Length: 132
Image 1: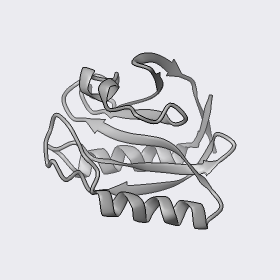
Image 2: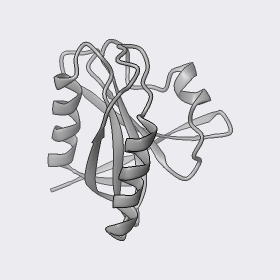
Image 3: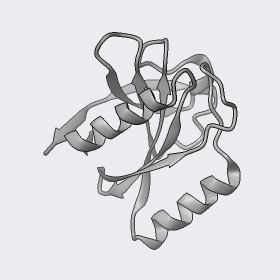
Image 4: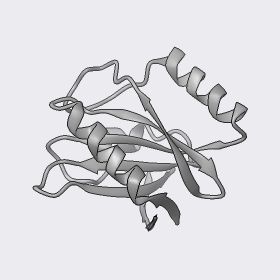
């Protein structure tokens, strides 16, 4: 179970829409499964079908998160034209079994945000509790 504010959900959707037609990506951090901070990152692939973090930017964000006394709780990215479910590539590249993988889908008229736990190639949808 992951806790995230309604405002942060809206910010994820705004980020996803602002990057069209490409996928956008970033980290979400917080404490005790409560996400408090969005870290927008660059999709260096500039692709509508996949993403890659800039390694220097990724290390900088991880350092900032640790210095703030938080943990990276989730990796997020958008699916501009496909549903909110991990692709084969998303599953293959899900290296950290300790974080959640959030997908923001813009495939439908109303955006969909879902979270997944991906461990050893196995995908389990995770409940998102939306807070105020």
